[in-house]
Length: 183
Image (tube, rainbow, N blue to C red):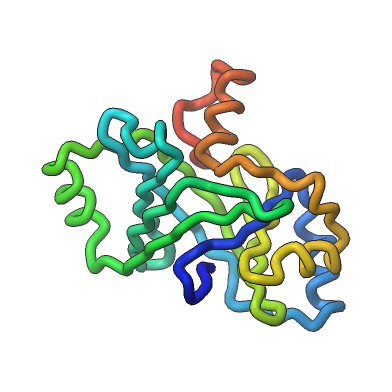
């Protein structure tokens, strides 16, 4: 969730017990946005020009919707990752993919997750179940504060994106599939 200034402010935690976090969110009277939804994500690049400069171009489908997202290079404000984020909905993921292919972009990584979203104040809390474990992301201007209220230590946050996490996972698990997908 990006703010009005088109900057995403996020803090992410690995190895989360999603059931415990869900209970805590209920205690805090957070509002569940909707049921858990399957997301399929494709990272697009052209000869690593975006990734090598810390930028990401992502096409995501979830529940019949398709969104194209650009994320700029990351910087840290304390423990919170901050990066420019521009996003728009597209009518057809297939047409968007074809357009980018014609511009020389290819899919360099694919990842999937089941995401359940909650709201507490102006912060979105995402409970992510992925093929490499469960994560919680807190996004918004008060992300670090809400994370603390949920029992997380901001100093132990995960700064890598899912793209980087899976690249590192592949180094440790060379027999894993090349994409972070559910089997």
